[in-house]
Image (spheres, rainbow, N blue to C red):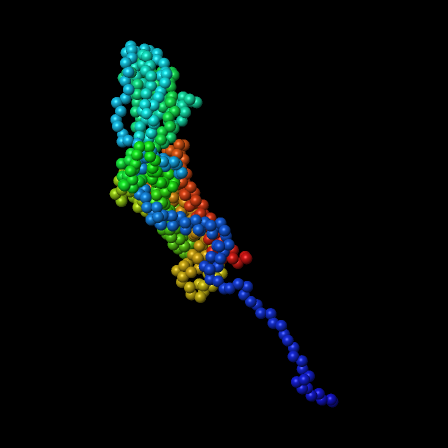
Length: 466
């Protein structure tokens, strides 16, 4: 038998290539991964920034634009954004005695139209003085004003005055004059008080005027500045215009955001939290306790919100014309939680059948630990969606209650009450409705898109499919 002796030279080194599994991306926590997924959703990210801007608009806005939302600028009523702010210096107002004429005092059953209407002096926001030719047989005159040409449909507009003395052939208009075009109509009346079938109309363009003393008192010019008749100054600047009482729209939107967003965020936080705890307990315990708890929730749903709002106002001693923000919050929290409780209960009933819940119970996990550590975090998506839908709903509830006089009372602004005020002037001055309505729409859209993005980012099952 042959013997072989092996040495180290008889062996060749063999290189083995090892495949080591590496982590494709760094390890992230639950919330870090959710933030990465949220940033990938452009709509949700833009909505998130919009919500931040709205909060800054609400909190820091009044510090930057320090204008009292209750102060009236009587020279600028319902002024739209970008309107001409020039005002001409004139003399202080001097009363006018009018124009009287001598005519045949015999009255007639039929009268004609005035042959001509003219201005006694240039029209301005201080006064418009009209003079017309007398009408034979007239017992008096009626003066009307319109912001539209009455020729197409014969709508002469707002009745300003009824003159019973046929000798008076003049009228001075001092009623809420703004720098715009007016159509004045003068209609003669017969001996029976009936208006003539024909009338004469005059189109008048008014210019904004102000006295030198008023310009200096309101801080439009320095006290040392010498102003002459005919000089031009610029009245106060309102970036978004003014409302029908001359109040700054931007300042009212900022202060209104505090009320609307306070009610729209605080109330949902409280009643959603109540619904989470109530629905979690009912869904996890189950059985007879679950049935009793949910029947009580059905009873709360059947309670009339408006009736309880009235009862809470009485209980809190809120009288007519006073702001009912606190009763509104209490009524929302007490009556709005069942919807969230039902959703959370359904999620809990589904999650408690999962295998990891049974494993945790076998390991000795307590009930409160299972609910707070496992079940509620897995319902975050549903909770956030419910919260985002609750915010605009509460804003609309506030608007409705303010409309019927049970919510935010004037002069305190809110987006809902501003919309209700803007409806009255939407045809002539649409900016009073557009701005608060646009903020409500933007807020609703931003919260909805942000809620959808957060639901996708926080849903663990969607992450497992990627």
